[in-house]
Length: 113
Ligand SMILES: [Zn+2]
Image (cartoon, rainbow, N blue to C red; front, side, top):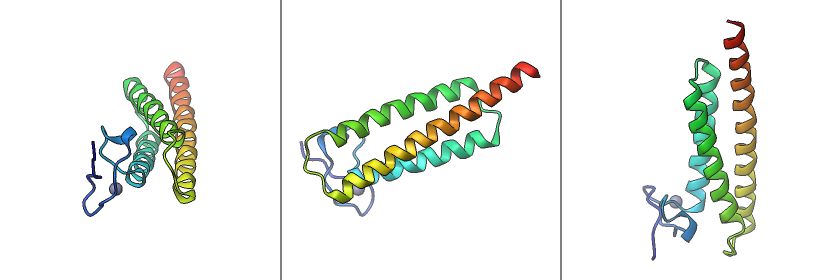
């Protein structure tokens, strides 16, 4: 099945691993990075519910897996795309760390308070 990226103005082909998301690798990684930034902003404000943390953990696990599939999928990736995938991995790892730190702090405050 041939699928084109659904982002307006983008004519890039969607790799098989991203058919469900309907995004090319570039737009998939850009959106992932944006979502990470948004999650960090949301949690930094405070008052995040436990369920929301679980949703974020699930999201990061799923998208991390997707990224790994893309990276090792055997598709001919340009060096530029490989670098983009790696930097998105780094964003994801830092995002997870950041969010876990905030989650731990919140748990402590709940216990004290
Ligand atoms: Zn695209």
